Length: 275
Ligand SMILES: [Zn+2]
Image (tube, rainbow, N blue to C red; front, side, top):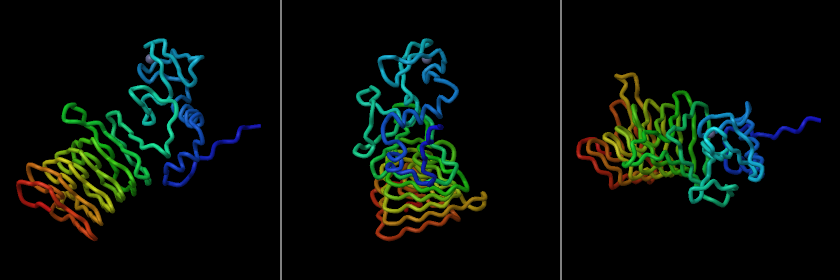
């Protein structure tokens, strides 16, 4: 008789609780991941070699005969948890805060989705002043409706169109998020580029940019754009620029509403259009 397929929730929201339901134990998560990543056979994540054998005495470990390294399914994926530089065998995702370190690749959101980190998940793009890495944390494509909840978004560096933490060209709601220590030319925290952005109960602090350190809300309709941003009960604090828009830079023809107990303070700009 065929083995019963594991049920994957169809809902668009994937919370930590859904993850736990999908994967009641560590082995079920490893098997699921292996079925996707290694459906055509085990591949070494370091050298992409296929001359690989299972380690008999270390469960879930494989050895690459080409580069002579040991690895598990998690190496090179966002579930490669490490403690003190070593892979850990199991992670209690409910009682532990999780830091997801991106490996130089931004998270591209191309389909409608809700990501709920429950206030315990940090996503770090790993860009610092001392390395030359350039990677955002998230990019939301045009036409996509996305919600990001309960996440700390940090370490991002934006390229063209800006947005160190997030570049949004879709319809994005951010709720209970902390967006901090991201940099870009425009929109250190968020670049809302021809998008619709709602920020609720969140804090955007200590981001850097040339235009709009916290948020850049642009571009103007003469370039075919125009953006809408609504800030509700949120704090935009201590963002710094050498130019315009310490907290928020609102471009011509873009709409900005600041509502309900929002606080915008401690932001520094040397030129006009400081909000
Ligand atoms: Zn290898």
